[in-house]
Length: 501
Image 1 (cartoon, rainbow, N blue to C red):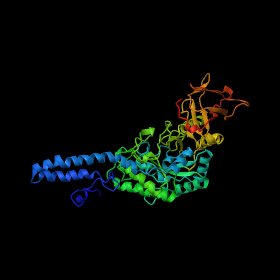
Image 2 (cartoon, one colour):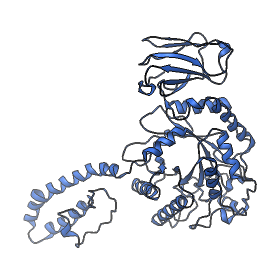
Image 3 (cartoon, one colour):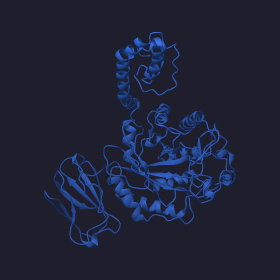
Image 4 (cartoon, one colour):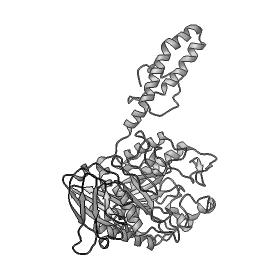
């Protein structure tokens, strides 16, 4: 407790604001508001009213204004200081992976509608909430899923432990609305986490903060637009803390706890900070995305300021902007919907490669989503596309994993990555006529080598000047998907300042 307030510890002051916005000794600057409310009535209503006015204006008011301004100024800084930084090794390892598999799955796959969002919309709430009684994915094979992720060139896997619809795909001690209440009665998280460890894939979980099913969460379906009659947010937060701790303890260590559903009003900045600290206390080296807190700016996914918790940003259904300063990960669907949808439109191989390369070229990770079918299989069309991506990556992995984006920023032409003294150019679109022109860079290019298939003897023609870089390649030598050109530079490529294209 801070000096000067201690004497009021046993007074009538009621500390109803529990946010720790003050000094590290435990003092809350909000206590000055309580102090003001305690002093003023006694000075104004006491027997010596005029002297009370003098005391307020001449002595107490300057003190309260001073400490109040200090509190206002310190609160943001202290909150930022109290956010434990991510484990540097964990963050570097995660960034080096570059490519992960996202999985949205649950009883809603029986309807083929969107997970969470179709509750109370396309599917009546009463029907949606009983789908688990029919959910029996007997063809689910965790080893097959993980093997597919490996074949796609993915290094980590994130699955929805609980989405906005509240259904839990593990054996939870805190609810009966879980996988053990289905005809299936097998713990999905247990089988999948074990399979990931057997095959060298980093296991991670997605967890929704909002819960339109749980009676204690204040908002319900459709889409969080309907208030519930008797919510209890304090009890719901305890439920969240219990379940996330349970997941880490039973299936960890995890690579990432990937939160979502933070945008709704019941979730606050203070709750986000507390959740972040809670997760890090359960596993100090875990990574937590920025959706744990209130700092995310819409689907752009960037964090508004340093006072918000979260180790990386999360652009959704779009490639994030080039950024070497703040780690980020684009999450995107392979089809149009996160959960499985019959006859969904699947992205072409070319589109998938463009998304991957422009993401990595922007110094981000890509989390590509599939929605398994109700029988437990990943749809063959989606599985085939993932294998095609993996076949391409097997040839060109060196310029994707453990690289940094740039120095040429992504553009319509393509993207670039770098490592050591090498730069990889991924040309997605050549000019109709003439050379591909890239901006000038600091540092001398020593050589240019074509890595993608081409007729024997094909050479890359490169001209570097102070005005820019000209690259020419015969039309017959250009790969219809991606032309891969490796440059060798004098010195370290990562030290070359990034340039726009």
